[in-house]
Image 1 (cartoon, rainbow, N blue to C red):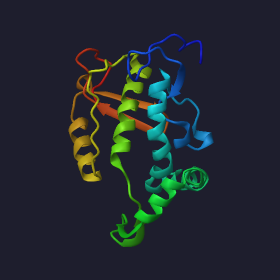
Image 2 (tube, rainbow, N blue to C red):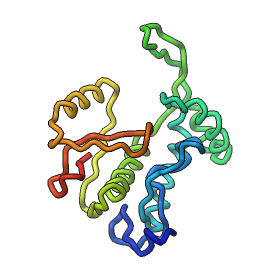
Image 3 (cartoon, rainbow, N blue to C red):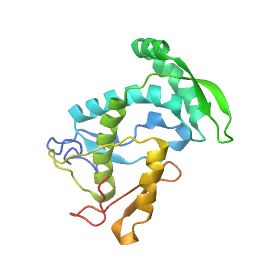
Image 4 (cartoon, one colour):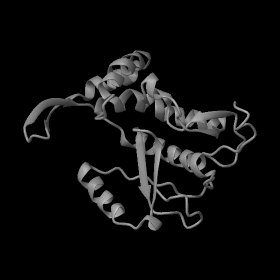
Length: 199
């Protein structure tokens, strides 16, 4: 554990003393060349293990739906090894494959396949990530009874949400890039801290 985080309280439960410095976003979500500057936060063993369970599932499944420039490389380099170590998940994914049609940007449809996905795993991980980012960016501990909500939206819903957030004056919103070209977030400022946002 780094000296910088040693003795801190776990950001995920906000009660136990941290025993490790956790990558808020697991390194396995990224190619080795994109793992620099991933945010870290202090975590206790119990919370780190609970978060890792979500990450093990999602680092094997999410790359199948990736649409970012490194998606294919991430799928090809990371997923086969993860599924080889988790035969139960490998079999479950194989049995969930179904044919589908995907509409391209040109309006043409292309035949593809879908795999089953347990969205509750993503929601669980995103709650940990929300707490971790609140601490990483603003040293803000969310109390155990503070609710961290996650809303998964289709592209149309996401576009609508962005149109609402985009119309807010700068004083009404907080924009934050976690690191270059990886992800960004927007939301209303927290009533407790003008730099923190409610997401």
